[in-house]
Length: 89
Image (cartoon, rainbow, N blue to C red; front, side):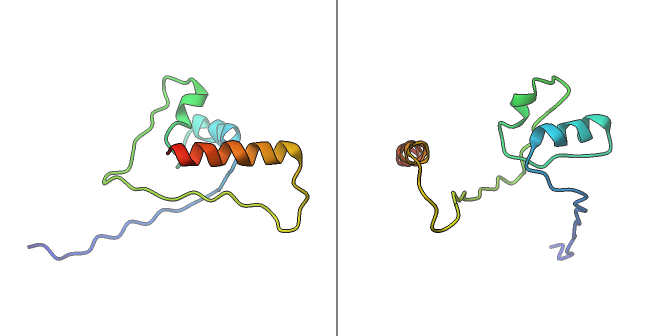
């Protein structure tokens, strides 16, 4: 049995929470985007491909906001819809 350990290092040059801005960078070349499944479909670019990790990886998600804020009716509706969606999953 081969017991060698192979390490891979990823240099993260930029983090971005605006996929459209990141899209322009990797469209120009020499950049790659690490994102969630489905984000690629929003760009409608046939040259763009989503390649899932192998083996499959899963992670949890967190919905968070600041303490002691006033919850507006719109925010209350969003949180209710989110809770309903989470229950269906």
